[in-house]
Amino acid sequence: MFRFYIALWISKIVAFIFKKRGNERDDWPGLLAYKICPQFLKYINKPKLVIAITGTNGKTTTSALINNKLVADGYRVSFNDWGANLQAGYGLNLMRCVDFLNRPVKMDAAVLEADEKTLDDTMTLIEPHYILVTNICKDSLRRNGHPEFIFDHVERTFNVLGDKTVAILNANDPISSQLAAHSGARRVFYGMADIGADPFENTVKDISVCPECGHDIHYHYRLYRHIGDFYCDSCDFRTPDAKYFAEAVDYDTKEMTVREEGEATAYPLISDTVFNAFNVLSYIALMRELGFAKQELVDFLKTQRVTKIRETSVKFNGIEYLTYAAKSQNVSAASTVFEYMAKEPSIKEVVLLLDEVQDRNHPSETVTWLYETDYEFLNSPNIKKIIVGGHMYLNHKLRLLLAGIDESRIVCVEDEADIVDHVDRSGIEKVYVLFEIDYVTKARNMRDRIVERAKEEAAK
Image 1: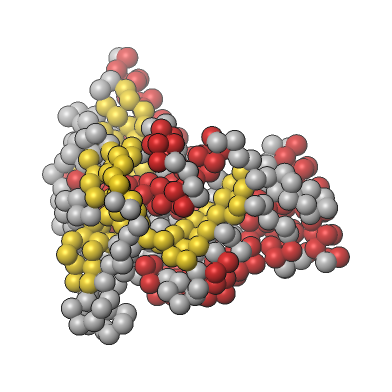
Image 2: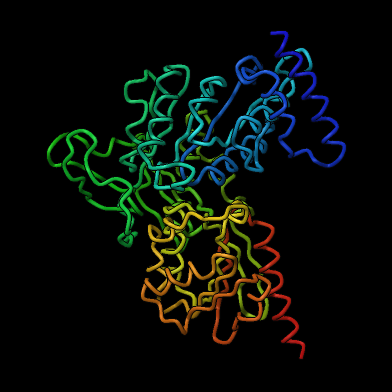
């Protein structure tokens, strides 16, 4: 314990200095604590409520909703809202909850967006009261390998924690719905009816055979990718019953009707996408398990939108200019966003900023994700032009051509600064800047430069 207290005292002093310098979100103090005491996450005392949110996609939006509601109700919450979802980020978050004597008196709750690959190394030490899993999908080959590999890490977490935690699980995901089945943890499922999503067929199947018997998995309906009402006709593998069941989604009124133990309630939606409807549904499931009243959640959701890290919008002269996160290297996230671009009916131009920051420091790059991602979805008549910038511009151009997109609709430039010169506003309703999540600021700057150019041209 001596090593732990040295780590706590030094890291809290460093965190105080960082805060005074305006670097409050730098998680280096947490990394320092971990280096001094590798068991720091075990020994630090936790607040009365610790919630972990994990999964391939949807962690940031869902955890933000949970945090925002707790804060609105007067909870003092430590939340890694800047995306520091590894040991260092957890260390910084949890040291904010305790004083110098390791007494958990400074915060009422901790909300932890949690990396799924390292979950078994971290959450088994933290022991959260609730673990919400959004989904497990195909992700970066370089970082996460394949869905079964990630499933094993998350499953080990539940097996170690046992009944110390509650699992909030997606009933419509044939991968993550299997979690914690033999762990002793209480499992709570949320799910969705056939809402007429009519999803496109994906090049890559995140799961295609039954994990119980090896026969094909079938669907009564799909909602997106492998998410849907699944079953195996050779064994009893099927979609589990959901305690929180969205029986209808109306994107016109932006409402989702959720049935809970026989009673239906209409909840507001935060966007017009099925994946964000699932994020709201998972949030409802968790908050209801915490005892929050339905009407409280309804009133709160009326005030919420998708986090600005993921989506922003500016309008000028009848055209809407948007930034929209698409996650490079993440096959499922990028494909789902590309499908949304095709289905969202406006006439649009699409800018792709999907090169990873890390790729600039490597002599070779991971390009397999380009061929697992459904660029074919961008071959839609409502997308007039696709503009690609960055050092991988020729890789993207080749993939777009292989997707059957006419070369006249593709503009590729190596210097991203040149993108603004190629945005054509004639006959356009929207311009989307799709960006890798490390490029939040770059995407907004690009969007703002495009808008600035439009203002300059309008002033002539």
